[in-house]
Image (cartoon, rainbow, N blue to C red):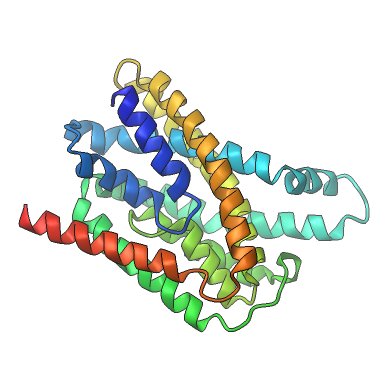
Length: 274
């Protein structure tokens, strides 16, 4: 990929990773929409590690934005009486396990989906329904994160694993699952963002060496630049998203659901006519 293509993809990644509209689907749809002549072998073997490095920039942005939480988690391991922070750290750890295990088991099968535009568009539409119905069925959640149960955290982690399929949003699935578990909008969004950091960091450890060993010449340098851009955009995005969920306790997901329906339907229609 060229540097200009990488920067554009990084900007889109920085926005869509945190907003519940599937960054992975947009990573698949962006080259198709702009007609980038990417090598099918690159898409199948090296595009996933390339995208993961962009995600790593997002993880750094999340770590910086929620640095007070992560510092509190670290102190809770050595400080007596830090019960709330220690419990929240445990909830993050439990919520991370399902996606990590499923990703390791199904990695080779999921890699093939990164060249399937129609599949990404279809699941993006399904993602819209998840957001819309999750909002409709959520009731009026009032729990803070520390009140979440251990089993509920594990189930939210399973929901997060849907994002391994292009079209499903990691943040969307985990936030909707948080609504169903009784979390309020702000707590659900915060938990979703905290879950993102270890899962992205873990994926980076596995995928980036593949890009180093087998990527195109200069691909690593280009991807690092993209990661920096994605991180800067993601920092602004998470700030905007947290403000949005703090101010919109009713129908906060509806605009994102409509977006998924419109974009998914347009892509399917154009792909079928092409």
